[in-house]
Amino acid sequence: MNDGFGELLRHCRTRRGITQRQLADLATVSVRAIRDIELGRVSRPRPGTVELIADGLGLTGRSREHFAAAGRAAPVCAPRSAEGWTVPPASWDELVGRESESAVLVDLLTRGEQRLVTITGLPMAGKTRTAIEVANLLDAAGDLPVRWRSARRGPPEGTQEEDMRAGSGEFGGLAGEHAAQDEPALLVLDGYEPSPSRLAALVALLHDYRRLRVLITSRTSFDVPGETVFPLRPLGVPERGTCHDAVPAVRLLTRHVRQVRPDLRLDAANARVTAELCRLLDGLPAPIEAAAAWLLVYDPGSLLRRIQADPLSFQSGPCGDADIRRLLTDVLDALDPAETALLDRLARLDRGWSVEEAVAMTGLPVVRCALLVRRLLVRGVVRPVTEDGARFEVLGLVRLLSAERSRAGTAPLGVAVSSRHRGLPERPRRLAGSADARR
Image (cartoon, rainbow, N blue to C red; front, side, top):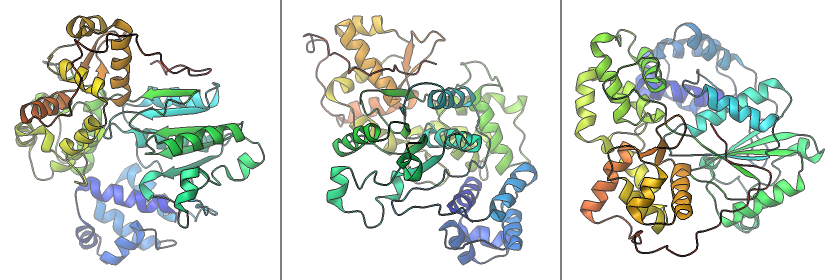
């Protein structure tokens, strides 16, 4: 077994909304067995144990087959180097609503000339899951060896802080034998936020290994020459007054509900509730999955009322690690004063708007305003609302938090956009040989 099966087990367990002890009771195995598998301490679980755990999770059909196959898989040869790199995590379920994004990213990393692609957006938008899908697609094709590293695991064991500041420790040994032989390879850096040391390391890395490609997931771009920025917007939600079940957010919610409550049918009788749940959560995959997990203890109508009462306190994922308010607060706190001031003005609108309308409202020069809107799009707090990408809106959850912070006086002080920033507009950094991904 590799780390992928332990992560798969934890994902399936938390999706069902049960603890390790509860799963152990359902599967008639020890809590220690569950814990050791999730922590990667067991080299390979016995087939009987895997089957019992699958029973406890209530897995059936293809989900059970994939789970059992992952448990039977032989250990990958040297899955983790001394520098902390692994093979890509297992892709344990179908990626819903990101088919076009995955296809574009695969194309960018194989057929295009882009060597550095950064997936940006809110922490609940599914950046990691999308990167896993892309990494597994490319790894399965066999033409581009893939190595993965997550910032959540911390620095590699034995890495010295001074080496990390210099860049050699942070990304040292990352290309392995492929880059050393000047062969093409893909390195995925999951959850790596920009910093001066990482920026220096990336520049040196791409200079030293000319056939290397790097895919990063981050809340914002690195703004390094040659970077292709790929903002990952939330899933599409039904328009108000409609309940279309083919919309990606509704498809995702329906899929998760079937996994945790196979007895609960989402049909015409509760279609309005389903659509409103997706709109209320802005089409963000992690909160949608959490909402499905809560249907173990709520009926759809009661859950909707619970979330409507205080959407920002709702847990961002089925593990209950953080609520939406805390995650979005971190995002808004990272904005600079000009971005904060513009977002505060735009968040007061309850309709879509264009850059021209934002200019008229704020008095900013056109180019300056467009640059600020672009930066808000990259961070995921603003999204397009029309096919041509000419009109935008602030996410509903962001509008709620912005209003809450304004009332409490806790928002960072922003400059008055109507009276300042009237000088020459900023020039965007030149991105050699690339442009932002258009979708």
